[in-house]
Image 1 (spheres, helix red, strand yellow):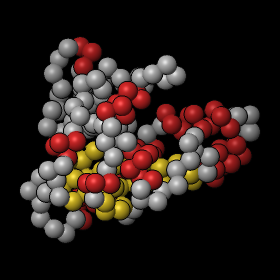
Image 2: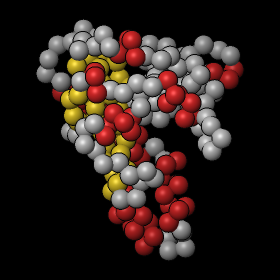
Image 3: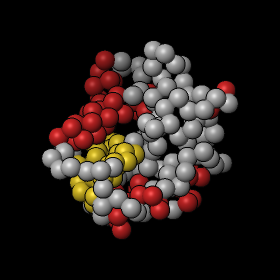
Image 4: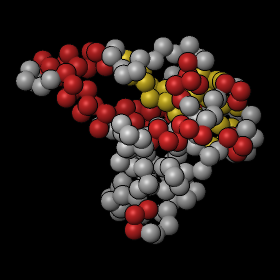
Amino acid sequence: MPFIETKFRDIIFDTKVRSYCVNSNFKCPSYAHSWACPPEAPYLEKKISKFQRFFLIYVKFDLEKYVKEIQVKHPKKSEKSIRNALYMKNLLRDDLEEEILRFIMDYPEKYEDKLILWDGFCRLCYNEKSVGCTYDSGKPCCYPNKIRYSMEAVGIDVNKSVSLLNFNLEWPPIKFLYRFGLICLK
């Protein structure tokens, strides 16, 4: 199970991170369309500071190998389209979710409270009963006690935080792609 324990002081908060979801070069489709995304997502530095233990859970994906495998199967696809299609799939998010849930199930110590920060947008309402977040309809969140905020949505600069832990992130990813989640326990 890939995880690293970290300290609160090594989780870098910056209010500007929340603006990365919408800028002149990029607008995330979930921005202003989800209860778990900016501008609705709360800035949580103060709340997170009250937890005692922090575990960065991650999935490392061999992007270079994946591109080569897909090119063999679909020789007419460009490398760019293969890489872009990968980001649209939930493959890596599902792997990260599995790792997070496994960590929580296997964690040997008692804790009174936990906060889990996922990557990407909250997907709880994308199920058999619902077709998506209720935000645009004006209805309240269906799962307010289970809402899945991403680290960026609550103000964590993931790139700076993981670089303190000696991850060599490439941006844009060339060889490897990482997905990160954070588990906070008290």
